[in-house]
Amino acid sequence: MVLDQLASGLVYSSIIVLGSIGLSLVYSIANFANFAHGDTMTIGAYTSLVTFGAIGGLGGTVLGLPFGFFVALVAGIAMAALVAVVTEKVVYDGMDLDSIGLLIASIGLAFIYRSVVQLGFGAQSTRYGIQSLRPIEALVPYGIRVTQHDVAIVVSAAALVTGLHVLLQYSDLGRKMRAMADNPDLARVSGIRTDRIKLWTWVIGAGLAGAGGAFLGLYSQLTPRMGFNLLLLIFAAVILGGIGSVYGAMLGGFLIGMINQLTPLLSDIGIPIGIEYANAIAFVIMVVVLLFRPSGIAGEAS
Amino acid sequence: MTGDTTTTQETASAEPTDHVVELSGVDSGYGEVQVLDDCSLHLDAEEIVCLIGPNGAGKSTVLKTVFGMLTPWEGSVTYHGEDIGGMAPEDIVREGIGYVPQTDNVFGSLSIDENLRMGGVARDSGLESVMDTLYDRFPLLDQKRTAKAKTLSGGQRQVLAFARALVMEPDVLLIDEPSAGLAPNTAKDVFGHVEAVNDLDTAILMVEQNATEGLGISDRGYVLDQGTVRFGGEADSLLDNDEVSKLYLGG
Image (cartoon, rainbow over all chains, first blue to last red; front, side, top):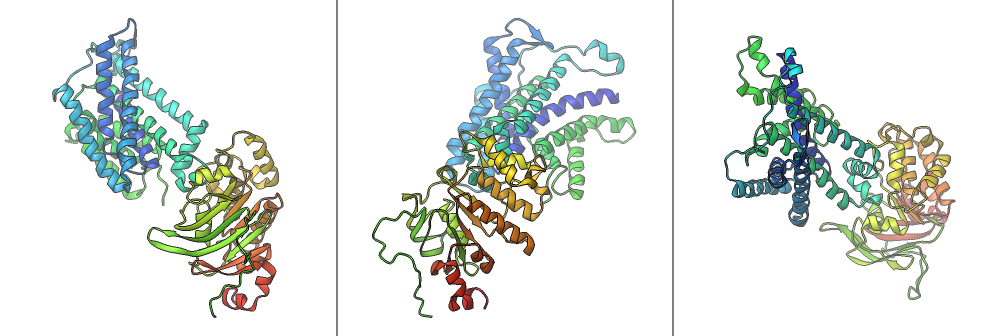
């Protein structure tokens, strides 16, 4: 039972982590809490839906997923990144707002993204049209009920997170992103074209959100509110990890996803708290951690 | 105090000059608040020029206006005769001017090596060899290449801040209060580094609260007060000037 919960926690965490990283990256470089981030995930999911519907399976499968789904995933990542870049250029960049103004503008954009999706696809839920799988037989004797799709989500998320780590630590762009997050004034003084770095940050942050959204659609289903509904948990993850820290967001996302999925264990050990309180428990744990570490687990005390 | 300035600068200012950096009649400030008021001064090749004066006189504002962090409201800022007023810092650094801020002048969460690499983002080529040269010159950085900059002491940070600006091999280095917050011995070391940088044919325009020490290593100096130049001239003559020492050097 515990193993099963841990396994499903890992799957759910993978999706939360993909969402959390982008929120934290954008916070550290564009300097505001982006409330449209959840709906950016929705855009990724629905772009994948449309793309997959258009191209179909393309023959073979990997981990129970048609090749076509991976192409659709890439399309979802690309569209989420494109929408974020256009939004930055057209809205945020032109508005000359402080971080609170940008935050409020992003709430408006969240409504716009969601409304456009709802206009196109209706408010009801939908699915990719990929057949659901039975749990992997070999793991059932251990009480673990995960599908190949779940494995695909975890492996893909791990690959994306690893790729981001390599980019941040070893590439020129990654170093500039870290430098800009550390000290934007000194970055400009050093000659870094900070506008370009900010655009790349949007591409990466929104791209990962798009991937998270596409996987969320696979994990459960697609609705126009899917990303927004997850946003509060993602904020909790980012704050728990230390807002502005990418590695904190990874850790926070992992913990929040795990806590969420481990809630059923409480009733198993006789504590009468049902799974409907899963999010509430995650928030309580976040608050308790912040009482002791106000800047989050990996946050710099300022 | 009639308020007349006793600058020894060119009185016949009509002929074109070959100053490396020149401010003429510059007004500048932050938002609505004016700090510089008709400020004129210059820096020649291979010089060290020190700006002194009371707090709020506009010394740091001069550096920020030269480096494009502030746009002059009036007057001109030229570099080798070319108007650079209002150019963005990331472009000015490519022209050959470097800037070392007073505080937060290293990337604390980046390693020493990464700090130097950030100093060289605008270089087209030769980054590795210039970094090797800097490591040779500053062995303490060489020993700590992979350490995070925030682990350095105040004096070591100041050296890293210089080195970061030097990766571009600038013509001109603007340094804001290099000795601020340092113990006297460390400050002395930092001034030594300023002189060593100058020996590489880099002209230096430096703001310094510690006026006597700052002028001590400088060729010339200016006394700023209320955003304008009150006195200017050879560093020694400023140190010997009774009025300057009474008003600005604390006796």
